[in-house]
Image (tube, rainbow, N blue to C red):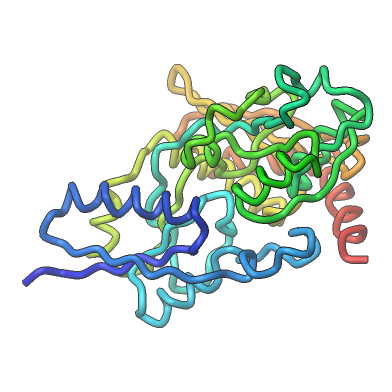
Length: 314
């Protein structure tokens, strides 16, 4: 008798592209299983008239999907890993991390600035971003630019750019690439300028703890080097008790048997940056994240985060 596995997904175009990719890859690996996709809107999809940092971040794009799993309506959920909180609800677990796209941020500019990069845009050019992490780092490096919050799905944001509401947008390279907008990227922003979000570029598949049958299926898509890099990043974020809407950036590299994790905490105005680096074996990923968090704490990261919490919640 054929088994049916139900996949929970957000309704957004990017979420569905990612979920369909997961379903299709699993269908190839398990032709005898039927995979069904259940779509729903999350709180983060519904509230589009306020900055993300103002409406909270604990499960903003995941909670409704998690309820479906806990109630037995869905067997697993596909997330952009950067949206998945580092502390999951009791009874759920991160079962699989897929191979990562380039996790870098990218610049897309209005046609009138074609050929421009961040460093060559004119003073006062309006750059749209909904990320405090991007905002803080870019203010530090490019104080001559003006920054404005932007919400909505990728098509909505690009339409606002094309209509002249913004001179440029900062978006995830991975999302642009997955939705076929790679040709609109004018600059892939190097890590020296903008460290990326924890988990950016990877997909996280969340499932129920103890559901060994489902876990065995989704593990077919696990990419161990990506998982190790992301475990280090998530451990760093968890230890700092930071949600996805705080200016915490990371970069991870595995080379010559070593995992190198770089982490940064920045103030909203970009004036204060605390940054450090640790290295160890990939098997020590979670310990490396904790070690790095303690280093940046000692350098003043907690004071920066506390100031941000007070500012955002005024």
